[in-house]
Image 1 (cartoon, helix red, strand yellow):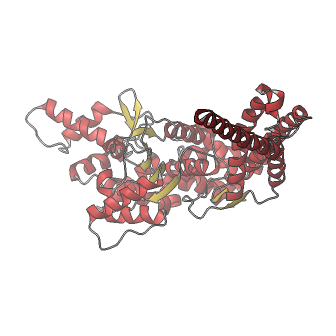
Image 2: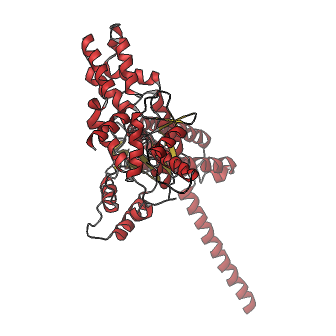
Image 3: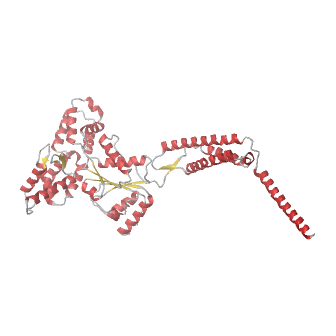
Length: 478
């Protein structure tokens, strides 16, 4: 009897449990299940809305691309919109797959999910109706667009593109551009600076610094910091300042540091410039030796070819000069006298702009032939003179000055020049003639690498007209 009672009570307990389970299932169905009528059409609507959303996103991206400029960034609202679109692009296929693989009854549990996703897509489509508030000011932006000539000749453009290719090459960290004063080094790197700023590049910051002639680690550290709108404590020592600058540049990410007008090599570590951190260094110098000391990929700025020089002159003097046939032969002689240096060409052209008197043009040519430095002394002479002064060795300086006495258009034979130096006693007695000849070759190399002489091939060197005029002025001062 007791056994029968226990069995009955167990049955009642189990029946109660089944009843509770059944009640829970019915509640679940009642709260979360809907008759899945029309769910396939609703899923198709999801796909169409998703396509519309992606089309809207592409339109916004195109607008941003056309308007994105330095000192601007995408607004936070637009960034969040893009993140939501990305999330929806991941969720839509998952929900569509669930609906397509479930049974008729199971689909009833997805009706509400399909409806909510449709409503969220409607909200995103409405949110994406941005007017003109796609971009905002970027207060953390570092970099400055620099003034450049409106007309750029092909030769300069080619060097600019070469530098940009190096910057995009992960195997190149340091680039050195060298050439004589007035050849266009600063212009070409300013063009590169502006190109990086106006395009979407892989660099986070672009820093431009003009290097002082009297090099100082602390002064350079200060200039780099100021260009990034940061402050390095003035009373800290050089090593600690280098550590601060290193930390700042590393935190900024991928950077390009332009150092315009380097007159001597220096240790990046001492200054605090990181190497092999994704950053790039671009420097300009008048001496190839500076580029070599800095372990740069070297680019030499050559003088402009004849056609580029003429086009640059016309662009600055005015193309209507072509209407004055009597002036053209003299103008071409003037351009030839400028010897392919953009700074000289622009200076002379701007001076002659609007001048139509034949006698004035003839007089200008005579003056240029007499001493071209009269026209560009302020712009060029100080730089050329500094290159001469940096030779430091009085013997090398005397060897350089003797070159001004040669008047050979095809250049001076290297061997003859060295022999002349030896005969004039400018190269000290050194035991044997071979040793003295080697010393002469070393002096020649120094003068060529400092752009005071130009190697024209065929074992000859040549002195630029500007350099000749400078040498004559120096001789007069001695």
